[in-house]
Amino acid sequence: MKAAIFFVPVLAVFVFFLIRAELLKRQRQIYIFKPLATLMVIAIALASFLETHQNLAYTMGILLGLFFSLGGDIALMFQEKRRAFITGLGLFVMAHIAYSVVFLILGRFSPWDVLPVVLLAVMGAGFYRLILPGLGTLKYPVIAYIVIISFMVSRAFSAFISPVFSARQALMIALGALLFYFSDVVLAANRFWKPWRFHRVNLVFYYSGQCLIALAASYFVG
Image 1 (cartoon, rainbow, N blue to C red):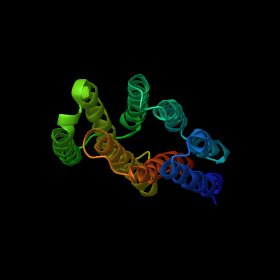
Image 2 (tube, helix red, strand yellow):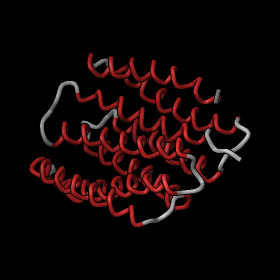
Image 3 (cartoon, one colour):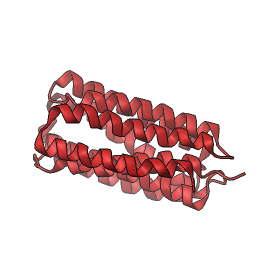
Image 4 (cartoon, rainbow, N blue to C red):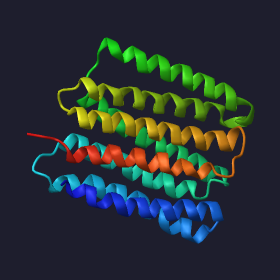
């Protein structure tokens, strides 16, 4: 069994208590469990170095993205403040860029790339139109974020045709990127469209997505 697997139940416990703290509005617990959960995902990526085979470009790129994500998670704990929200948004943009570069380097281009690009473009445009009335002065930053995360997800699907990744890894990467995307959709819909009391269940999507992307680092074969 891969060493990284042993960190997954610990991550699940942290995420459970984080969501519980969010729903009960226990801010001190959020300050504890949110960084701990992201640090556990970083530990999952680092555990790949315990395996016989690694791909240094993948692991280091994902770790870079995860450290940007850690900064973004910390900033978004104070997202009621505009500056903190913008900072968090910017750090997650950097995380998506880091992931995109990894998927560009290790993935492959093919005619099939058109399908996820078109689907993501339609979904992104539709979602932007939905939340547009609530964006105010954040229209352009949100457009940039939608474009960058959509590009990241589209390149994640290129793992399926890359000789670098196994079918299992490609599924982890693509599903992980999609879950990350949907977690942001829930978060943005709550902030800019209709507030939803239970919107923090998006953390299940977020951490599941990050976990799958990090876990893929442990499944390279020689």
